[in-house]
Amino acid sequence: MKFPQKEIFRKFVPLSLALIMLAAFAVGGTRAYMLAKSDQKTNTFTKGDADIEVSEPGDGTYTIDSSNTVAKEVYVTNDKKTTPNAIPVYVRVRLVPVVIDSDGNGTGDPVSVTYPNLNISKWQAVGEYYYYKGILQPGATTEDLIKSATIAAGIPSGKKVEIQVIADSIQIVGAASKEAWGLVYSGGTWKSA
Image (cartoon, rainbow, N blue to C red; front, side, top):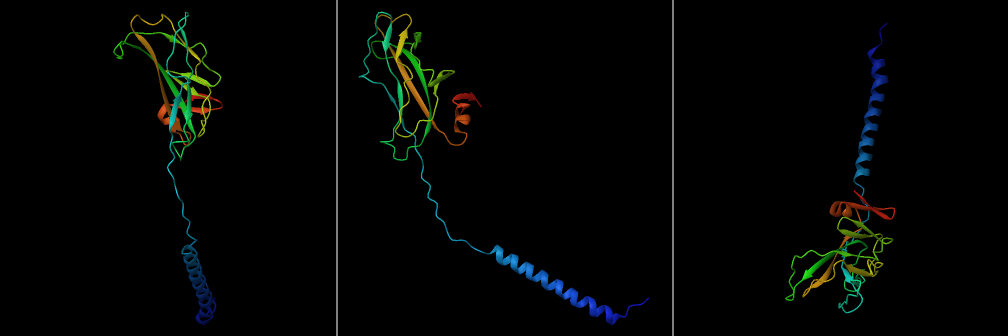
């Protein structure tokens, strides 16, 4: 059976033209959608700063008692007064006992110091550091790390013992503590990353 050409032309040409027009509208509409613009928004970013300070009540002069113990409290403050863009931070502290000669130089002599009042409910020992269990907000001060120190064999004759307090802080955002310290703070404790 043969279809006349005129019949085919009359049925398929209008249908083809309709499909071409539909495709043209689709492309034009998509292009118009892709070229649409929104209102401009300005985002201002300010650099946050961390400025911690070791606090020790008293004038820095300590007297050892008959049991070779000295009262010494150690705190850390996230100083908001001097840092207007202060940010919340994690804090760690290292206590380094050093024997000092009469000229004020370190002798390298070994010294054994213990901390009988170490605050383990608020601080966690990991390696040579004590990590504060919590976030230190701007303007806040940690709980005390220690209240006293005991020098096991006493102070060597003609010398002094200093306990140097070295504090570090790091921002709480992202994986900063994991990258810098190899630890993460989770569920109230510090854990290996």
